[in-house]
Amino acid sequence: MDAKITKKRLNILLSYDWIKIILTAVAVILVWSLLFTMTATRATQAQVFTIFNYTGTTATDRFSNYASLQGGDVFSYDILEVTPTDITTGGDYSDTLIQTRLSTGEGDALFAANSNEGVETEYARPDGTTYHPTYLEQFLSGYFSAAEDLGNGDGTGGFFQDMAEYLNGYYHGDYTKGDADEEKIEADFYARLDGLNDKRFKSAAEKRAGLEQEKARLEKQRTDLIDFLSYLDAGYVSLQQTTLYFQGSDGEPMTVTGYYSINLCPDDRMDDLRRDVYYYAESGSSDSQDDSAAGSSSDTSDGASDSAGGSASDSSEGSGDPPVRTARDICLVLLNVAEDRYQYARFESLCFVNYLIETHCSALQAD
Image 1 (cartoon, one colour):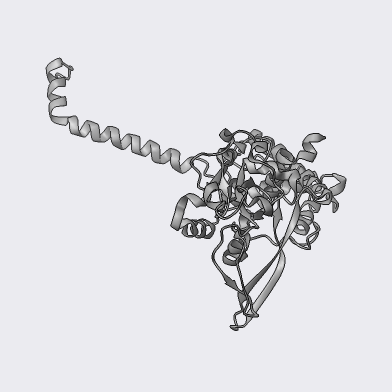
Image 2 (spheres, rainbow, N blue to C red):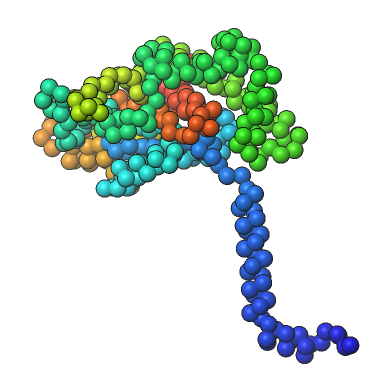
């Protein structure tokens, strides 16, 4: 049989079977693509750190740059992606956006101003009186169950007690001493790899390297808790007390008062935060200094809307002084919406809080 490949036979093959050849090539590409997709490491809820900017504050380019914190010194090895999301860009759909993201287990921290500058909405108290809620109160009223309870207002109870107890389990009952229980760390780490089918660590060498990263993760969280409590004690930040009014299951009004956010800028020592997020306030209602102290206009996003109080010209109508850009009383709500199996990463949010303090606190920069 003559099976010799000739130019004529090749031309005939291509003339009649070119569609089959293209379809075969496409099928091979699709199979390889599907194979890589199925075997690739997908970031879980625990491995994506999502930061929201809520209505009432304007996010600058520096806020968008939070995405670059992944893989740096801020978070542990387990955070594979940092996602800053400015929900104010959603306009009328902002509330739908935040509701959707939280309902799917996305969300770790949220900026919200404890200010009602420009707020026309009225809320009612149980006694019948009304008030204009701050942006922080608006968020907590709608998404109270998503916010971490920060305990007693002094770094004890709630989130901080849970974090201390979590760390104590890996430091022989007292995280402050730093004596790590390496056997427990190893056992829990390997159990988590098996339980979550983490594909980053397959070989024995990869698992050993991962174990060292896990030890570093816990050590960082240990020092982060110690550092934060010292910053809180120094007054660089404070825990913000908020009173909320709900309707109970029995239809009766219910009042809840507690600490559900960290006030990042209780005084001018943290006012540099306005290079990341800010709002406009009447000069008489804030201790903030002139905008020029925060750096050049290139530090902020020119296209961002001034959602807290409109433009400078709009906000200054009827007053002698123009409004000032400020970060005073901008708070950070720590969120906990992840599934139970991802709760081991719950305390990564304190790493972000410390990053903000250490980046913007003038008292620390002076040291």
